[in-house]
Every structure is written in structure tokens, then in C-alpha cells.
Image (spheres, rainbow, N blue to C red):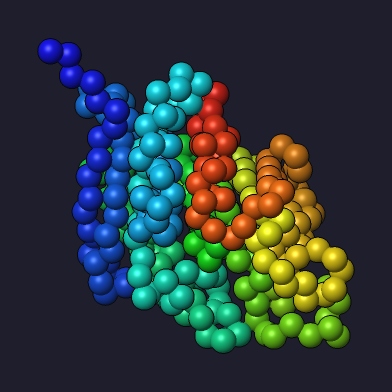
Length: 273
């Protein structure tokens, strides 16, 4: 009998000293992981509890079978009632006090969890091999952590990112809307030439249009962030990829449909190091 392995899967938990709780995670590895020896690139994902709803078992299995996609580890971190406290921007909570533990979550990711993965699961030591992604508020969190810790990451993927996250309530007297936290975060941050960003929005992500310019806020906020990244020195297209899905919604089915394309962007045709 010939054994055929589609993927290797395990679930576990990590006790964080920063967050004072256990965080559950799921790790999926390609069949070649069994052979030992080599280190693997990593896809880290927020909102890992949506693994099944996103259909990722089938998506990852198909990706592992494609010769034009390099084998990688998928690690999904689950969240729960802590989500609105731990996801956000590490530098500051939003004007309603949400995301007040985002700084601690960033320290958990970078000082505890990543070293753990490198030690226990042959996760690559190369920053270029690390991709961090998330949806909605989880996407904001992933972008924030990657942008501010480029020594640990090579790419960030954001699906319908919550880039509306702001220091104060929106007012029409602020036409540039600089209260959105990510804009000044990028402006005041450092350019890292190796970083690449992937953004996705759907034309039906929402209906809100706070500045009444005919473009929904989700798309507006993402495009404004892209412009800010361009001012910092990132090339669009090139270092920045933007995917707008006609009819796409702020939901799991939309994100599940585009996820295979995201994986090709993240791990397809990787250059030798």
C-alpha cells in the first residue's frame, strides 16, 4: 500500500505571559514536512477560528500540490471575546478605547509565538519567508505588526482591512481625515525596501461613504493607505498589490474565493535566497 498525505495538521495552545491567557492555534504543514531537514516559509493568520468557514483545508491542500507554489507552513491563531481588545494598532487604541491590548498582542506575536514556531516547527529564520495576513480588524492588526517590525516579516496580506481605525470621531472639518491611525503611522515610520503588501477590497464591502465622494469607505481607506505607502517609497504596482472584487462583500465567502490568489502572490515563484 502506498500512503498519500495531502497535508499534516495539528492543533495546540500557547500560554502568553504578555496576554496572561492561552491562545489556541492550528498548524498545517505540507507533506514534505515529514522528510525533515529544511526550514519552511510561514503564513501566519489572525482569526484562525475561521479556518473551516474559509474552506482552508481544501485551499491549502490544493496549494501544496502546485509546483509553482513553494511549500509553506500555515499557522492560524484563534481569537474570541478578546478580539476587540487585542487587534488594532500597537501604538494607540482607537478613540473608543478599542484595541487597548494591541501592543501586548504584538509583543506576544513577535517575542513569544514566532520564536516558538522557529524552535519547534522548523519555521524559516529568514524574515523574507514570513507572511502575516488577516481579515477586517485582523487585517489591520497584521498590517500594523508587519509594518512596524520589518526585521521579522517579508509580506502582509489584508482582506477588507479596518483602516478606518481612528484617533477621534470623523468630522467634515477634517477633509484629509488624518485621524485614521495608519496614515500617520506610515508617514512617521521607516521605509523597509524588502516589504511587500497585498490589499483586497470588495465593491460591496459596505455602504458607508462618510465623505460623500461616491466611494465606499473600505475602498477609500485602503486606497488612501496605499497612497501613503507610495509617499513613503513603496512602489505601486510592485511592492504593493491591490485587488478589488466586483460584487465582493465583507464576508468569509468573498475572502475564501480570493484566498488561492493570495497564496500565489505570497508563495508563488519564490526566488532562491
